[in-house]
Structures are given as structure tokens and as C-alpha cells.
Length: 137
Ligand code: AMP
Ligand code: ZN
Image (cartoon, rainbow, N blue to C red; front, side, top):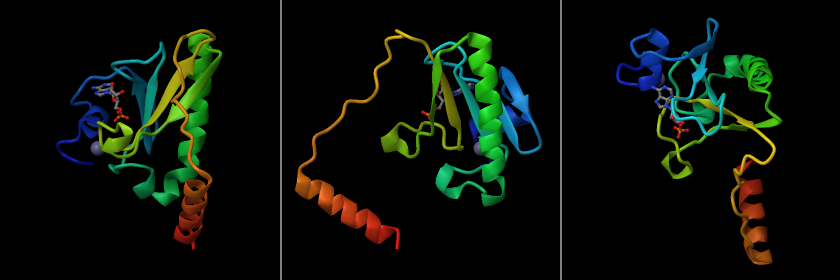
């Protein structure tokens, strides 16, 4: 737990939230500025910044909770699909630095567009490919 973290405060009940799920390790609530109806956030109770420092022992359970909550959200708002997302780092749009999985219900024709694609040269692709393979060694 972190004293000045807004999501730790939500877990402790110091800031109100529309809680939808809680167990010993996880907490889920409605996003206060939803992208679509039912937009929810699932967070680990232990304070960590993102997926890279997420506690290993909780990884499998996290996926189970995501499936459980996403299924319920989709059913509740009669969604046609959903996006899962974890913004990681300020450059990726992370504002709250306590790991959280967004569940964003999607509806046919809801007008939300996916990110624009880029054209990379063959050389840039090959160089990136090589660097990632090397980083994975
Ligand atoms: P991110 O940009 O991935 O860090 O997303 C943070 C999310 O937390 C945003 O979608 C906010 O709308 C949401 N948020 C921030 N404060 C609260 C709050 N008090 N209750 C519910 N959601 C919040
Ligand atoms: Zn926190």
C-alpha cells in the first residue's frame, strides 16, 4: 500500500468508488470517466506500478478475475465485445501509477477507432526484430 496513491485509497475505502468486485488480492470498480458504459478497472491490492513489477504469485489469479469481471460487465451492459488494456508508463497514457487493467465494453457502431497503423521500412522492421530477440536472450 502506498499512502498517497489514489487507488490504494480506494481499496482502503478512503475515497468512494462504485465497487463491483473484491477478494483478498484484487479490487474492481467502475472507471469514473468511462470510455463506454460499464468501463471498469481491476487492480491488485498490493501496490505496484504495472505489469512488469506485478507480483508473480498473483498473475494467474489476476487473469481469472479479469475473465470473471469482464464476463459480468459484458452481460450487464449487453456489450458486443470488449477491450482489455494496461497503459504502462506516461508515454503510454498511464496517469495512475498503480497497476490496473481496463475493461472497456464495446458496441457495434460505437464509433471508437483503434490506433492508426504505421508503415515501417523493411530495415526498421528487421532491426527491431533483431533487438527484441537479443533482449529476450
Ligand atoms: P490510466 O490512464 O490507464 O492511468 O487510467 C487511469 C484511469 O483511472 C482513468 O480512466 C480514470 O478515469 C480512472 N480514475 C481516476 N480516478 C478515479 C477514481 N477516483 N475512481 C474511478 N476511476 C478513476
Ligand atoms: Zn497504490
